[in-house]
Image 1: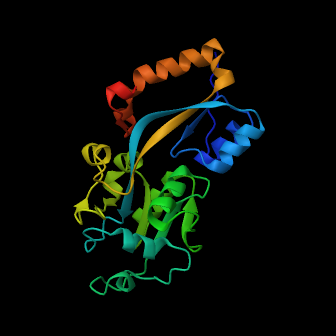
Image 2: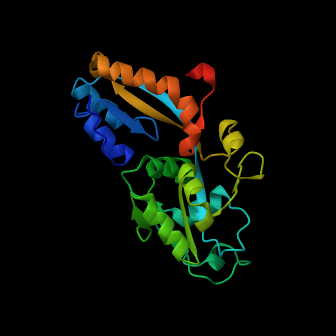
Length: 240
C-alpha cells in the first residue's frame, strides 16, 4: 500500500476531507459546523478520534529579558484586529520602548483557529499587520530574528527549537498564576486556555477498506507510545 501524505493547515485538510478526496484528515481542532455541513452535503460520514494533547506555546525572542509572563488580556490586546500596540512599552509602561513584531500561523491553520477562539473570541480576527505563515520554520526564524518578536504555535514545535526561542508562561485566568506548558499542565488543564486535544478524522466509507482499517488500528495501538517523540502528550491509556 502506498500512503500519500499531503501537507496543509487543518482547514485545508477538511476542505479535501469533506469532498471525499482523502481518507484521513489530521486536525488540531474540532471540525467546524460549516465543515460538518459540507461533509453532509457530500455524503461524507466520519469518525472523530482524539489522539494526543497539545499546548499552544507563546514565544518571544531569547534576548527579551523583561517579559516574565503574559495574561490572556495582554495577548488579546496584542493580537486582536485593530490593535494599536506597536511597541512593548505600549503594552506595559515598565517594558522598554522596543518595536513589537508579531508572528502568527496562517489563517488556514487549526492552531490559528484555536488561538483566535481561546484568546480573541469566536469569529474574531488577528491584526492584519502580523506576519502570517503556514510554515512553523518561518515563524521560528521571524521571532528569533526580531528582538521585539512575539508569536505562537504548538508546543511540539517549540521543543524542536527551544535554543532559538524563549517560552512565556501564560497566566491562568482562574488561578491568577503564571503557568508554562508541559505534559502535566496541558493534561490537567492548568495551562489555560491554550491546552487542547488533537485529532484524526476517518472517512467511514474508507474505513471499510482493509488497508485503511489496519492503518487506523495501528495508529491507535501505537500513538500513545509515539506521541512524545513528536513533542505531543499521550491521552490516558483507557481513552485509546
